[in-house]
Image 1: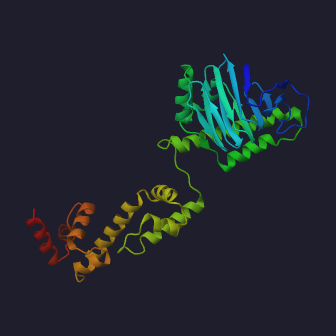
Image 2: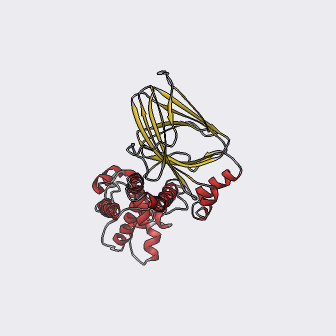
Image 3: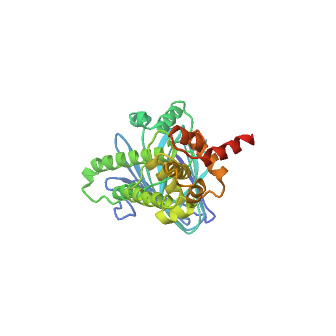
Length: 347
C-alpha cells in the first residue's frame, strides 16, 4: 500500500515496521505493530491476521492537524468504527463521513483510495475487522441488508452495509473491549479472537437489521420497557372521558415517546390513539346495553360534548349507527332513532 501523511508541522517521519516493543498502547497479543512518529504526533498500527479474518487496532495521538492518504489496488471489506473520539473518513466511491465514538459500519471498496483527517490535539482509537465476501455469505440468508450488500460487492461496487453508521449497544462495546483487553497466552490469541470477532460480527448484523430491516426483523424490548408500557396503557384507559396526550402517557410510563409508541404497538397490536378509541367504543357498547341510561349521559361518560360526534365515532368503529346496533341487539332506546333520523335528514 502507498502511504502518505501531510501536516503543517512538517518534518521527517520515523517509520518502524514490525516493532519489537511490547509496552505499547492497545497492542493485541500476537499482533505485529507498525509505528509512525513525527512532529505531527504518533500512530500505532497493531494488526493480527488469521486465515479467516484480520484485526487492526490503531491508535492516533495527534499534536498537529494531520491528513493520511492510503492507496492500493487490492479490494478491502472492512467492519470499521471508532472506539475513542470521532474520526473523519473519505472512502473512494463512498460518501465522506465523520464516524463518531461508538459508531460502526461495514464497507467495501474495490481498490483503496482513502483519506483520514485528524484535528490537532486529539487522541483517537479504532478497532477494525477485515473479511472476505465468502466468509460472510453464509449469514446472508438471515440478513437482507447483508445479502444486498454482498450482491453489490460481487459487482465490484463500493458501498456500505447501512446508509448511516450504527451506534453500538453495550453488549457490542463489551465485546470490543474484551478483544482489546486479552491478556492470555499469545499462542491462544487466534482462538480467542476468532470467537469474539464472530460474536461482534453477528451482533453488528443483528443491530443493522434492527435499525434498517424493520419489516423483516422483529422489534425487541426489555422486560422493563414492556412493564412500563403496560403502566402507560392502564393510565391511558383509566378515564375514557379524556384522551391524554402521548407526552402524558410517556411521562406516566417513564419512557421516551418513540420507545413507548413502538413498544405499545408491539404489545397491543395497535397504535396508542386507535387502541384508545377502540376501548372507548367497547365501553360505549356496554353502556348502550342499559336502556335506562340516557344517551347524553353516555356521551358525558365518554367525553363527547355533542351526540352527533358520538354517533359518528361509533359508526366509524362499529360500521353501524348506535340505533342500528341497539336494534340488532334488541335494545329498546327511543331517543337513539330520533337522533339518527335527524342525522339522516340532514344528508
